Image (cartoon, rainbow, N blue to C red; front, side, top):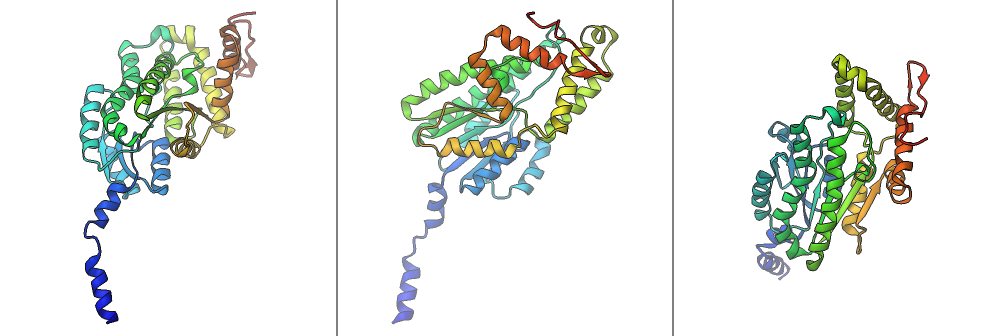
Amino acid sequence: MERWRSCAKRRLRDPFAKSRAVSDARTAVVVGANGGMGAAVTRALLQQGYHVAATVSRPDTLDAFLAAFPACSHAVPLDLSDAGAVKAQLTGLVENLPRLDAVVVCAAVAPFAPAETTDFDVFRQTVEINCLSNLAVYQSCLPALRRSAGRLLLTGSWSGKVATPMMASYVASKFALEGLVDVLRQEASAWGVHVVLIQPGALDTQMMRRSQASLAATIASLPESETALYGKLYRQMKYRADEGIANANFTAPEAVAATVCQALEAKHPATRYPVGADAIYMCDMAATRSDREIDDFILDMYRSAPLDGIVEKSELSATE
C-alpha cells in the first residue's frame, strides 16, 4: 500500500512545475553586465534569486562573461552607441523572457578633454551611450515592466549634478540623463513602474585603472599648443585621480550592487540613490551651494594639486 501511495504521488506531480517555477521567478535584465559595476550587480541579483538576462558591451567579451556567470538565462552583445539598434535588439530579448520585473543599466563611457578641443563625434557618441540609449532601453522594456509593475534603474553620476573641468561630453550626458529620468519617472508612474537613478561616485574598477593609463598616454602625446593651454589642468586631473586610487578612496562596485538590491526591494523606493562618500557630498553640495561656490570648490580641488612640488594657488578660481 505504501509503495502504491508513493507511485501515485509521483504520477500526480505537476509535469509543468519546473517551467512554471521559472516563469514565476523574478526576472531582471542587466545592461552592461560585463563591466565592474555590471558584474557586481549581476552577481547580487543572482544571489537574490533573480533569473538574469544580460547584455555585454562587445561580442568578444561574451564567452568570458558566460564562463563567469553560467546561471544567466540569456546573454547577448549590445552596442549602446546606436540607440535604434538597442531598441530593436532589446525588444527581441525581452520578448523571449517569461516575464520582466527589473531592468538595470550599468554602462557608460567617460572620455576626457577640454571643451575647446572636444571632438564633436566623441561628444555625440557619449550622449548616445550615456543618455539616448537609456531612452531606448525604456521604450523596449516598458511594455513588459508595465505588466509586472516592475522597476527600471538607470545609472547616473554626481557629475550629473556637479560639473568638473575636462569632462564636457560626460558631464553633459549625465545632466541630460537627470532630466530624462524625471520625465520617465513621471510618465511610468501611471502603471506603477518605478524609474530610479543610481548616482555612484568614482568606482574602483578595472575601467578606472584603464582610464588612468589612457590619461597618462594622452598627456604624453599632447601637441605643444594644447600642452601650453591645458597641460597643467590635465596633470592636476591625473594627480587627483591617482590620489584616489592610492588612498583607496573609490567606491567598491559591490556597494552599488547593494544599493541596486535596496532600490528593487524597497516598497517605496527613493527617486535617486547617491552611492559613495564623494557622491553623497557632491549631490548635497549641488542642492545647497550656489554655482559660484561650487566653481570655487571644484577649481580649488584641481589647482591645489601639487605638481613638481609646487601647490597651485586658487587665484584662477571663478571668484576671489
